[in-house]
Length: 377
Ligand SMILES: *Cc1c(COP(=O)(O)O)cnc(C)c1O
Image 1: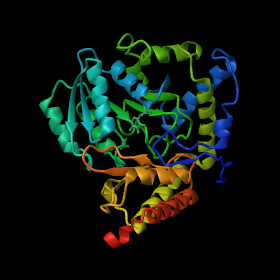
Image 2: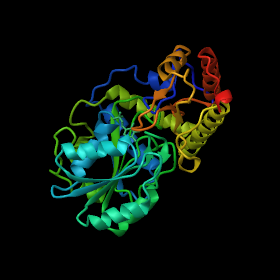
Image 3: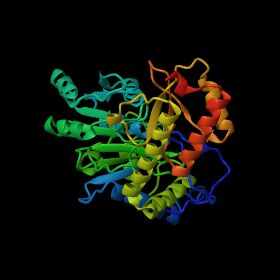
């Protein structure tokens, strides 16, 4: 696909917010009333577009937009969906799984975390065992792509368990939806959450929840918060197409353009190929420079990669980061509890040539720092 006009901003190799196309940014250069027919039509179109991406062919799902960042969407889903006397079980192998646990605790929801180390997947049998031990669990939550490490979690197996045990299944698919085939109906997912600024390549400002209508329609009065009430938000959008409270208009205009650009690129399959290619070039290039990955190959997703700090005592991450940033490349610090890592994302409006340019810059910076990883290895 043609590369859309470059800007002079630094290139973001982060898990979001991401580098966006010039045309997505330009879509924001307007004022529009939040009760204007044009805006209402735009929000409708986006909701339909999201359901099409989720391949909701039977029309069983609803897409609800929620102001705020991705976490607001997760908090809205969790605090609206878990019943008052419910019990939430969360599969945790990183910071985002852990965040769901904290959201529940804050809201006074009974919650059990089933945890495993950050460098592996929680095995379905471990989840099954936790369900055996906690028969009163009503709801299961899991993270699809754990952005902490870059690990893909076995959502399909968790979904089968959820169906067998008749549990509601909530998936944080924040950093994967739009960049890999993910069909809620196929994986028994009752609610899936993602946001405007990840694989759909919009700008930050709202989250969305793709949720089974038959379940959503039972959630009146369930929310533990006014502004994050997923049912009331849906009801408002359905009644007159309006948001209950000020919508992020410009973000929504940018997102509509981002959805068009996803189609122009060739849909999710084409975007997945570009991300996979970016990721392959990144990992091969970094290995050639002497870096080692934290995540085993078989668990690694194609969105973000964690690299171990090299053992060389002259390597200093803060300097490494700054020298890359000065050259126009923004990478991401690690978020692991026990191991020193940094992360490089390969999603957003970036292409193989951007990855190659980053790799060349990493090579230069290592030289400037007088760090030779290949000798040390
Ligand atoms: C980005 C992300 C979130 C949400 O983060 P915000 O900073 O609130 O947008 C949640 N879960 C995962 C897995 C993410 O990657």
